[in-house]
Image (cartoon, rainbow, N blue to C red; front, top):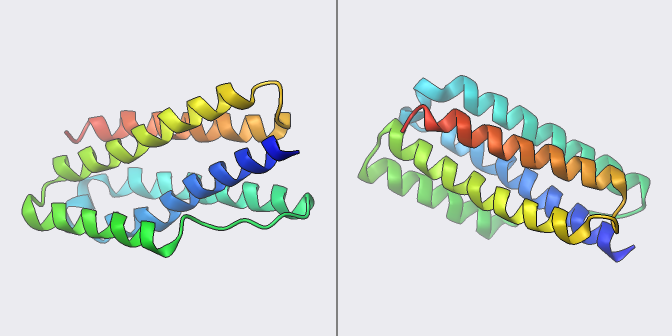
Length: 143
C-alpha cells in the first residue's frame, strides 16, 4: 500500500535525522548540562529507526536516511549557533525547533493516513510523536 510506504519513509527519515544530529549536539561543550536528556533522546530515535527498518525488511522494502546534505546542514547550524552564542539555552532552542518541526509533520501525517495505513505503522508514528513532544518538554528546562 502506498500509504504505508510513505508513512514508513517519513517515520524513518525523522528518526534517522535525530540519530544523525544528536551526536553532533552532544559533541558541543554547551550540551554538558543536558547530556543525559540528549542521550535518552538518541536512544529513543535509534529504537524507532530500528523498528522502522525491521518493518521495512519484513515487508521487503528498503529505507534511506535523511541524506548527507540534510545532516551536514543540521550540523553546520548547530556549530554556527555554538560559535555565535555557545549557550545551553541556544542549543535547547535549536533542539526544540527541530522537534517542533517533527511534531507538526508527524501530526499531519497521522491525520492524513488514519484509517488507511497499517495500524502498526500508525502506532510507530504515535511513538515518534510522543518522543518529539517529550523532547520539547525536556529542552524547555534549559531555555
